[in-house]
Image (cartoon, one colour):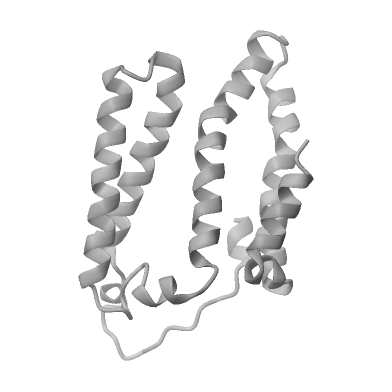
Length: 170
């Protein structure tokens, strides 16, 4: 609901299309969603069950294969319908921002559930207190996502913002 309120309404490119959903890239969406879901599953179960357990190895292998399939698929889809058009990689800071995200996501994916579990099991916190204590992270993420629209410097100069963010780390 918050995303609907914060994001601007996109105007369709062509109102003549009878089936406007055909302008989407459903195969690309399916490939990347599956890859990310399996990647998250692998990184969540790896610390719990063991890194050499099939519950980690199978999803991480499938995730990598589906991720590669996504990039292969996107190279053949028309650029006006692609989820990730090839022109994106020509933006100078796209690679830096992508690598920064790829460093942070695995850490958060594997630790968020551990933190919640730790607070409940060791700290004997009720679930509501755990949720409230983790709420600032979500609020910061939404605030930064909203602020990027008005302060494009955050995206335009990722070397500075990533470095300053690492200094603010507690």
